[in-house]
Image 1: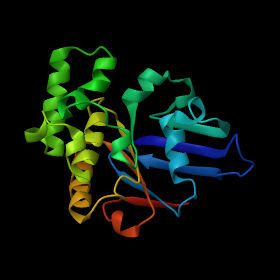
Image 2: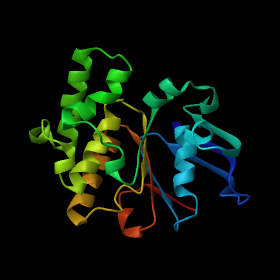
Image 3: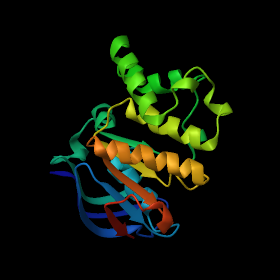
Image 4: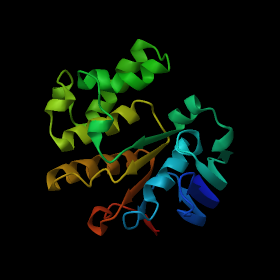
Length: 215
């Protein structure tokens, strides 16, 4: 089944006349890891922002073409519902973490959707198992390692139960141990049917990808 379809996508930011990418076309199969590879400035992050619906809702510019999630054009999907279908994790986990404990961080998204406390608790338990940080659930994320913080950032998206997970160069700041931990989580998520699109500029971070698209 096709989870994500990019149809003739072209974009340039409002502040510049430079076209970031033009006439992109590709499909992503459900339950696979697709890697977007390219040098800095090639448009990897911009593409993920488009898929997440942040462009043009947050970042302004001229966007042409269409993006479909399970056959539905994302331009017609309200942002609240889209956030439960597509989750995005950014390069620097410190910019995403702001709660006093790991548990609070994982609960933040579902709480804003008014999900029941029992369901939130169940999701937190499941996510803590996936990211392997149960023993840190009451600690402050700011006091943990960079790799652990990135796992928490992933977990905070997973508690929203997205069908598609976008990862924007999430291993670029991590050491070998941290990258290994993140890769293991992504592989487990793939085995459970989550569709993953990850951007990077290093070939050695893409050994878990099923398909590579070069910009």
